[in-house]
Every structure is written in C-alpha cells, then in structure tokens.
Image (tube, rainbow, N blue to C red; front, top):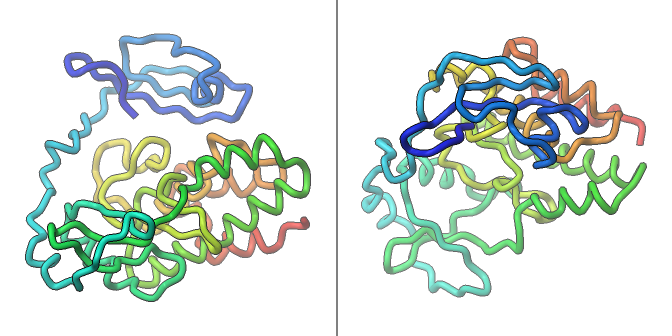
Length: 263
C-alpha cells in the first residue's frame, strides 16, 4: 500500500497478527513509527526499504478501454434497482471472463446491459466484510471455526473454477466476495492486486509474475489477516503466505487442509 499525499507518496507493507506492531497498525490501534519513508513492518520488525513503483490512480489507468463493441453484443436488460447492480465497463478482458463464467454459481453472473451501456449484475445485499467482522466478534469456539472453514472451502471452489479456465483473479479481497449461499466471487477485471492481497513477488511492480500461486497467497493473506482466525488455521495461513510462490500449496492441497480439519 502507499500513504502520504500527491507530492510525497511512500510505500508501506504490513504483515502481522493481532498484538504485533503491524497487526495493531492494521487494526488502527497503533500509529506508524515514521511518516516520511518507505517501510516494511513484519510483526514487530520495522525496516526501511527501497522506494517501490508508484501505482497509477484509476483515472490515469492506461489500460482503460473502449468496450462499446463488446457491450453492444450483450442482451438488453430492463434495470430494476431492487434486483440489479450496475457497473461501468472498463476492460474488454472483464467482459470476456464474465462470459466464460456463465452458469457458474460461484462467480457473479453478467446478465446483460442497459440502454446506456452499463453492465447489469444480480444485486447482493453485501460483500463479506461485515459478516467476517460479525463472525469474529460474536461467534466463539467451534461456531467461529466452522464458519471460517465453510467460507474458505466455498471460496476455494470458486477460485478453482476460475483457474480451470486459465483465469487468475489477482484481487481476492473480502470486498470481492459476495455474501450468498454459496459465496460468490466478483470483480473479474483481473488486473492488479491491491493492498494486502499483493504477494511478495510483485514488490518490484512486475505484474507478469502473477500466477495461480498469487491467488493462493491472497486467499489466506487477505481473507484472514484483518480478522485473525483461531489457532487451527495458523499453519494454513503460514503455508499460503510463503515468500516463494513454489512453496505455497496448490488449491487441491489447500482444500485437503481445510477438509482435514477436525471441527
């Protein structure tokens, strides 16, 4: 992530569980030790790092495309704000991926377009952020463990479906997982990882290093990090967040880990 203003923008990486400096900063219980340098804070270890490539803002995104031709091929849908969610088309790739995923209960479905050219999707009440917070605060013991396990198995199924089509999501965050039964993955722009879902191999700004292992990193790194899971999940978290992508488990291995848990 980056912090600061337009004139002075600094790079910041935070990795840490609750009770560590990094974890407390993530939970807004502690402040940064410095505000004028590029930092990496792992647990309680603070070190200055070389400046990372500055991210572009959405308005300056060089990859924004004219999708009018692709959108025109979609069926026209009579928009109903009670049933539908609208999104402006930005990338041809997203439309192509959404069409590839038609019929999957694990991936948000593209219903069509409006007369104005917006993409139409089913409307969901919320993403997984609030349910994750609620589960962490209200549920205890086995109830909390079973909920996390069920969520992760459903998300793994969705990601496995994407990977079977050769699609790397790249931005598996709680906001991109919709609260449903089963959970639904959305946002198939599949461009650049944001915040804590960025794996270590992207620190140099080389997005060609994205791989299926990058999604495995994001699965446990971001989905769990801000809402620390009970101890049974610690070994899985550590396995998925290995620095070397080749050392991370495959999705099949990850599924076996969750299914093999005693709950």
